[in-house]
Image (cartoon, rainbow, N blue to C red; front, top):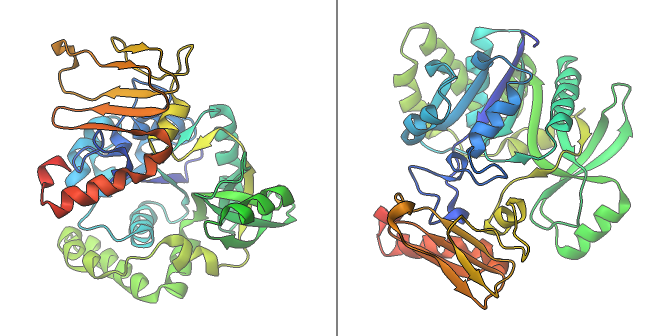
Length: 363
C-alpha cells in the first residue's frame, strides 16, 4: 500500500430509481443491489479499495442525515473519515472539501474519487486499473478512467480518446454528454470513445490549484474551511459556508476545462447499477431468467425480477407470479411496485407523485 494514496467515496445519492427499496434514510448505496446479496454497494466499493489503500485513507462523503447509517455499514473506517455535507451541492463542492481534508493530513496525497454505488465484476482488473490511474496521477496530471463500451449506451457520457501517452494512458480530447442512439452507435463504432464512469485521480495539491483556477469562489470557501479547521471550528464554518457553494459537478466545473488530462482505458465489468433493469441483469437467474428470492413462486413466468424488502420477510407472505414476463415486482412494508422492466427509469415519476401528495413518510 502506498502511504500517500487516499480515496474519496461519494455516497450522497438519493437512489430514487430504486424506490420503494431505496428511501431517504437508506438509499441505494446502502442496499445489496449488486451481484452479492450479502453486501451493500458501498461496502463492496470500500472492500475493493482496501486491496490498495489503508482503511484510514478512505474518506466517505455523504449527507449529514446518512452518516449514522453509513457508519453502520462501514465499521472498519475511523469515525473521522465520514464527512457530513449539510446540504447536497453536487460533486465539485463535495470533492473540493474532501480533498482539503486529505491535504491537511498529507500534503503529498494522491487521491482517487469514485462513487459508492457502482459495481466492478472483475475485481483483479479493477485493482489493476486503479493502480495504473493512481500512478499516472502521481506524476502530476489529473487522470480519469474510461470504460471500454460494450454497447452504444445513451444513458452514459463519453470521453473521446486522443494520442497514447508514454505512461500507458491516453490524452483526453473532450467529454461528450449523453448522446442520442444514432450518435452513440457512431461513437462506439469509431473506437475513439469510452464511457465516462466518473472516476478521477489527482495529486491533492494539483486539484486544489485547479479548483482555485476554475471555481475561484469555491476555492476561497475551501480555504476558509481550512482556517476554521485550524481554529477548531470547522463544523460551524461548514454549516455556514457549504450551502452557499454553487451546485456544480466536478466534470463541468473543472474536468472539462483541464488540459492536459489523461484517461486510462479500463474493462472490469463496470455498472452504475442505475435501475431495477440493471439489478435484474446483475442478479443470479433461474432457468427462466427470473431473479427472485427464496420462497417466491413463479409459474410460467420469465425474465422477471422479484424483490422482497419487507422488514419481516419471514412473516409467511408468499409472492407468486403466474404467466407474466419482464416485470419488476418490489414489496416493502408500506409499498408495492409492479412495472415492466423496460420502464424501470420511470420509477422517479412515482417519487415525484409522492412528493406532490406530501407523503414524505414513503420517501
